[in-house]
Image (cartoon, rainbow, N blue to C red; front, side, top):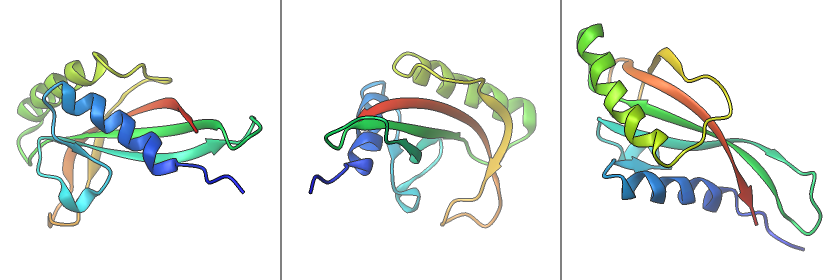
Length: 118
């Protein structure tokens, strides 16, 4: 039996984001905004031999601040992310996410991309 490395697919994107100087992780408990949380949200099993394509959600997250300031900070994170990620759909810009260590939702952008799994 061949194992499908779902976490490895997300970690490959984390590595690319970190190379851009961004704080990124697959574990939301280890994040400190501004940052990116990377999570595999689906797997296409169309390939033989354990390979496939993972759909990955990248949450760009900033600290709690007024909307105009949050969008500026998130826009900077988006610019960094776009240097290494090719989105497969429109980036959602009116999002909020609550991290394990935060008591309230934080401003966020949500990107979706795909990557190969081996």
